[in-house]
Length: 214
Ligand code: DHB
Ligand code: MG
Image 1 (tube, rainbow, N blue to C red):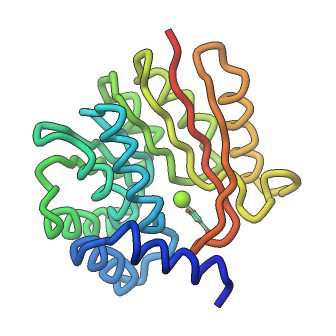
Image 2 (cartoon, protein in one colour; image 1 turned 90 degrees about the horizontal axis):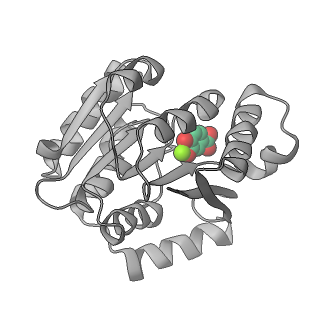
């Protein structure tokens, strides 16, 4: 096992302390044959803390998968908080629905099944926090949609911005989509942003974090 993984395991056990609900959500997702690409427990709890620290009440997630990050986001919200989450695959949405209900946060979450690019124009903002973690080719469109649905102070998190260094010279459409999204985050007059590299259970990757300005 790569040492990053061992340290991630240690930090997860020592600091993050995921409960049965989140552990079960991961195993049911993998048992359903879905890709093991959900955020780590440490990243999930980071999202939860970010929601709580920013006082978020309305969250928009793009890319539900099995609902693992969704559970963490929902947990960071007050009782009357809501998460709208977009998922392309109906089968993934079904697994996510079960995981969210089992974790006791299902009442806070609406899963919108279909292409996020079709769903996003039907949603009403503003959202306080966005987590973009779907098909990377559309990352620039997702960042633009988040801006449209934002208010000053809204927070945008974009996952997988490094992908083992692919962001620098990857020649696929995913890397290109992420590069374009990062360029928007770095240059848009209504955004202030940073991007951090991470290592851990998901190897070498990173995320971008932005706040929407006046
Ligand atoms: C992968 C990881 C992710 O977090 C994601 O959203 C998509 C793909 C991957 O490692 O392939
Ligand atoms: Mg991701």
